[in-house]
Image (cartoon, rainbow, N blue to C red):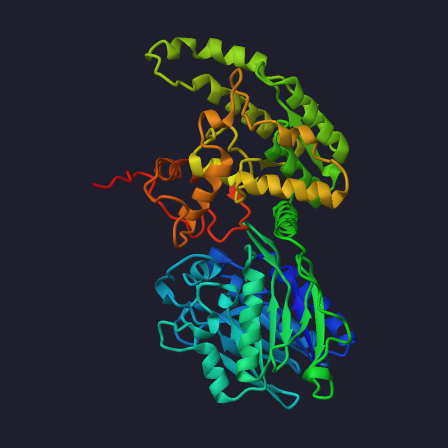
Length: 564
């Protein structure tokens, strides 16, 4: 039996567009002889639809799409599509379901179980968000097609390192996968929407291979691809034979139609048409780069924009963001804005211009000294009301806010989005100015530490085979250049010391990095918690780590971490 995994990039809420896209993929798969096509979870309506599900006509629109697909495909292959359908348990609720479209009709083949039930799931991620809107559902379903008994699982947990999805027991007491195995199936079809994070693909492949071999079944896992707000889905759909051997892997960070043949006559019991599995990315940095470019491209385009504005300081952060933007959207859609102050070094301005020239990005230079002078004059009567404090950063923060205003104003005129250039190390320590360098629609590297940002930048230059990001950008000490001679290390620990402690605090390891009560660890932890109020007001960041801010991370804004 030939089965096609449709690794599609759905736009959340665009049921009409997603429907047409899926039908095009089915047509392509049918031309290759596919008898069954399978989409990722919620492919019809898009992942994490949230309150779209509460709109009166949304569920009806999904039903009409299923009706149309059934009519269109009545003479074609069967389609197993992820879609919301009315609950059979609770009036007014929907179920996250796998729907079989076949021979001119459609029916629910499987419904998803949520660990947190109708009142909301514990934890974080797409499952926790979706559980607020979907009912608990029932266990997994079995469909019979072409003489095959196939168990259908809707599950995001297969790529979780902490808890192998085949061992998960839900609040209802069910273990979906084991229930299917015990009922007897020839194959398991896993419809996923698993976001990218470092190391998740390798862990997921190991787990799925184990499942296939342990229970001696074919296992086909189709995963979503594309950017959806903060999350990026990497695709890389998988097919394993009953020995656990990997037969096929879909493209990474690209749409794909992966056709496999489960015929017993094929070597190993299945075949991907003689095509070797798509390779994994060669390095963590390449994975990260592809996730950032895909996430940026989809965020901008799915928001209905084409152009972006990037503030260029001559530093590593803005350099990497500008490179990502040019790769994702085309250099012609990126404008770099230089906003030197009296404290900006000539080298920084030259480095920013050199980067833009290497990328083919247009630039504009807007010196901010006149605005600084005007603000100082306007503010003077008000500032005179307050006594100056040690460490007063009023005029340093003012520079950042002037720059934020200029970027936002240019974006208004151009109909563009501002890409924020802050990194995770700065966000963690509160090393930013609200309404200044925190402006932007998307924080492209907001989930990369400073150390990771340098690593991605070095990989990018090596990948391009030339020094796109000037060497001087790597060589100089990081600085916001808000006062003469300023360096980041004036306010923060050196990044090579800060980042390992930060990562350990966000995702505790055993044993912890260094002394648990060392001055450095205590300083980092204190600043980390104190900066939560800033992070709540920063733009969306593209998630690439296992613990990004704004997802699993939660800390009080009005709190004080102090122990006896």
